[in-house]
Amino acid sequence: MSVRRGATMHIDPRTLAAPRERKLPSVAVDPVTSEVIRGEMETVCFEMAVFVSRTATTPILNQSNERNATILDASGRLAALSVGIPQFMLTSTLPVRFALDFLGSDEFRPGDVFVSNDPYHGGGHLPDYNVFAPIFAKERDGSSRMVLIASIQCHHGDTGGAVPGGYNVTANDVWGEGSRWPVVKVVDQGVERRDVLYAMAVNNRLPDHAGDLRAQIGAAQLAVRRLEDMILRHSAQTVEASVDHMIDYASRRFREEVAAWPDGSYSAECFVDHDPLGNPDVRLACTVTVDGENLCIDFTGSDTRQELQAWSTFGNTRGYTVGQIAAMMDPDIPKNEGFFESIELIIPEGCVLNPVANRPVSAGTHHPGAEVGEVIALALQGALPKRAVPQVYKTGIPTVIMGTDPHTGLQFTDHSAEVYAGWCNAAYGMDAWGCQAAAFGNLWKATAEINESLYPHIQWARDYRTDSGGAGEWRGLCGSHYVKEVRVDARVYTYVVGMKYPMPGIAGGLSGEPNKLVLRDGDADEVVVAHTADWLALAAGQRIRYDYGGGGGWGDPLNRDPQAVLDDVLDEYVSHEAAEREYGVVLTGSLDDLSLALDLAQTAALRAERRSKRADSAQTDSAQTDSAQTDSAQTSSAQ
Image 1 (tube, rainbow, N blue to C red):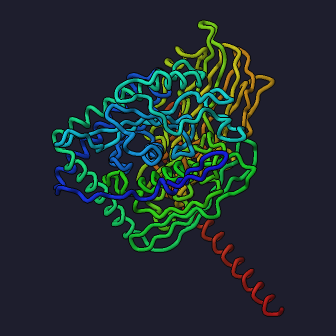
Image 2 (cartoon, rainbow, N blue to C red):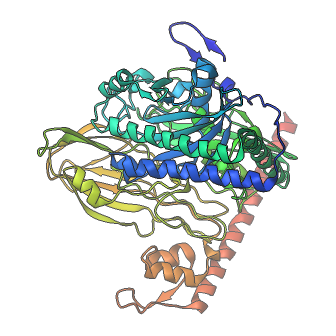
């Protein structure tokens, strides 16, 4: 492990990400047995995640399900995953690898449980606590040998930093964001370390923190029991050989997919509106090179401005990269170390996607993190338009509301987990659906009723925003509209993006509508958040209006089935006016009395007229370009 010693230790994340040494399998394994073992491990992952949802104490986990379960082999290679947020599941390996390298495998003993949350020791940001436990097999001589490691990563509601809620987006460094736990053993050979757990509880504002952490510990211990049983059924050697087989299979399938892509280098850029300080246009640059079965993703050229407050750690960027590529491939390919081994990843140190040590990263996990998937999709949309759909979101950070509950006298911190919805792009052959971008995986919306039972708020509106989904042959998901009223004096802390650069359309589709967050909605002192709200005061009875953006469309809107447009108008996803304006679909009648009907003749005529105007405009633009190039050449020749 590469460690530079000075005022602080610095771990080179590229060392943690390097391929792990393989041991030659001691037994042969057939594909059927390997698939059975993969299914068992994925079931254990699912059971870990459900255990947390059923036992955790905060709505982030027991309602919204922001938990991610994985299983690794004894060297820290990803062996299996099941449910969770894709890019966060894919960051789970590096913290475990740090623990293995730093402590040594001899410090992993039966009954141990570890905790890590540090962004610069493999993680994403401090609120994401990774709890992991080793699984051992008995040898014939009575000794034990580590075979697997079960990991459950969860988002916690506070980190003990300068700002309640875990998102100090104006911190000068990572220490200002909260307590750092690179790796700590919380259960030692089956015995809870009360000193460590007490220290972690004291360094957190929320009394529920300990309950959520214990839910994770319990989930990891449950996985240990299940996986020990699995090893007894199949033998440790068979399980290890099966993991090797699954990783090799995923790598082979990955390379076969890439080999079918057109060779070439494809480049794109995208931007985050601003960082939390208001610095504009945070740039991500990406070049994707396809060379036979080899895939290289290079983020050289991404922003390096040192004054920025928008940083995604190497591990976080790596997770978003694999998450986006996986979304563009056959979903039957197992998601494991085979993906990581098959991508050459170049992320220059010092850019916003691989910061130098100890930069603040609480907001950067989301932005520019989420834009990693966007810029990869934009780079590949020309070569793979049917697959290159951004599986990302545009939000900023959760809107954190803090105050004192008059019924308990205790401080509350509401992360607004019940209001997130939007940003889902359409894909080839399918309208966007549901309420959430694929990048959020199986993250659910906490119910308004649960939120109102926990916090002194009331929710007055919850709906889709008509016309907010990007038009296309397949339509982007509508954004959402929520109105929440605080019933006590409170303060709001948040950071908003996706206003200048909303979700993009693909293959001629239009962008979704931008985000808009309004505090003190409807009052004389109403505030539309420009980039950050830094503990803005709200009086009891004031409201917050969340107008989240829509997803981008796929393909030319003029190619959309007119019947689908009529259905959208009837469902109020699209207005009567936008049907004609965006899609060229002429409707007669009224929505009020449900007498709407298609005028197919007028629709065909209008669409033909618009296509003709497009062709004329394109021809004019081409002629002007040719003329400009000719003038430039003549000027150069004269000189």
